[in-house]
Image 1 (cartoon, rainbow, N blue to C red):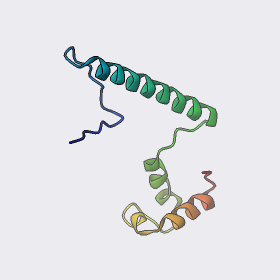
Image 2: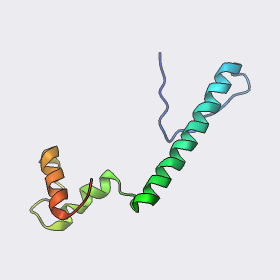
Image 3: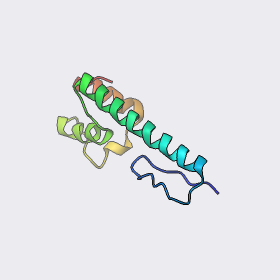
Length: 90
């Protein structure tokens, strides 16, 4: 049986964990912190912190015939085409 941790979960190091497990959890925690800093640095460099939900919400506001209910019916390519027409960059 395998358990996968998500990005948002806290990594808990127990006193009775084997030494190897403690070391691996510490490495994982450090790597998550480095990844978080790298993502923040990249977002700051690009001047954007857009998420997928922001893109989905912005298309219906452009009055292109799509609304929050039917936007899920378009294809991936139509979605990106609409973003290009709105002037969004990938």
